[in-house]
Length: 568
Image: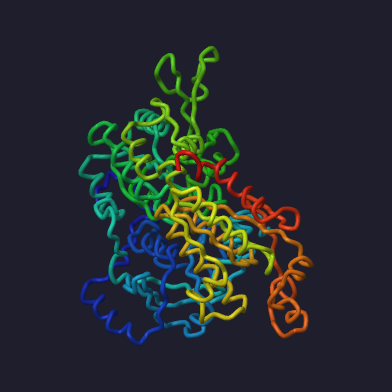
């Protein structure tokens, strides 16, 4: 490692990779050990632990480090650390283990990238973790809700032993470890390196900003597209990386390096997320990193309390934060400037990521000054107008509320309009064909809704139309389904808000009567709650209008949103 590069956080890069003979021996021994299949988040964290990007950590945090981070924002030894890096497992896995055991870790394909030597097993205080990360324990906050409801109840801490690097099939040449990137920077003679970690497309504004920062700092640029867990509405990493490969040609030759970063965005964590990313950037060899606000269409004010606090903590890490600034376009002068540089007598133009996305959704022109033509071409290829995208209409409501009737009428109307491949996933149809082995416990109903969501997501991302009509009584599962489907197309939640007494009157199967008599347990609306959606695009009470009129409202909404119409 070249001495002129900045030192890794903690002084040296952690290397958890075992020698081949030791790795093979562990593989043989692992047959007798308990095993855990890692989630996508855990795989990303494991990769950054294993390759040294999270140096000086040598594994998933034990309880002492976890408690210290949540209380003091430091590891137990006093080293600054902003975010817990933890391995959560269900109770059945935790109960198989004791301190001193070795747990085999497997990816989604069953491959074993590492084992963990268990030093701690405990039930975390998730409210304290939420308070530390997000400043609140209110589960109305989406980040808090995810932490509280989607985290397994036990944490496992201990040192990792890496059997083999986490394997990827895509963009292999861009998945460079800190050690490899440091070698590359050393060969380039780089001394000052600024990191730009982005979960968005790099358009002209970001290009102009990074070019300006490179000149001011006399630094090389490391562009690191984030490829952890995408948030709803994020552009897929395949498209973002292809766009980066196009735009990198516009920077001066040998000035810029492109490398993928599998870092999970802890949305809602604010400066703590920025500082975790700064630690990774330092370990990759960077002296500076561009600090972006969570709302990527906002500008970070260098004098704001948020930036000052983050910069102070970044000094402990040994890296300098550079504020993200929105660049404005002066049309008459054909150049970009910061907000402070913009003359009052000249109109300065800007375009938000949301506006750009809407232009793509509606097939409108993207201003030539706002992005590079090859980037726009790539985006149009990946994201056709809504009239060419798939979508899902998801009806949810009490039993006998009219969901199935509305779903069937909508299917017929869409087929009558034509131009769409339509699939109906009615609750009873799914129960017969996908979920015949499931009962009606809360756990089984959740599994059933996830199956419906998965099938609908596949239909949607491949350009089809899915119409779903389950009861889907729980907000948390509906939100998961929305995220799953919205990643590949449109999602429209329709709350069929027929009152309970009307549903009972309509009940031809006598299910409500059986539920009130206690014959049917956990029946939605009687012995089990129906959580009214807070995020429905449409709410329909079928006691007020006919089925045809209700479906017409859905059709009009789909036309307004551009999913159906003259161009569809």
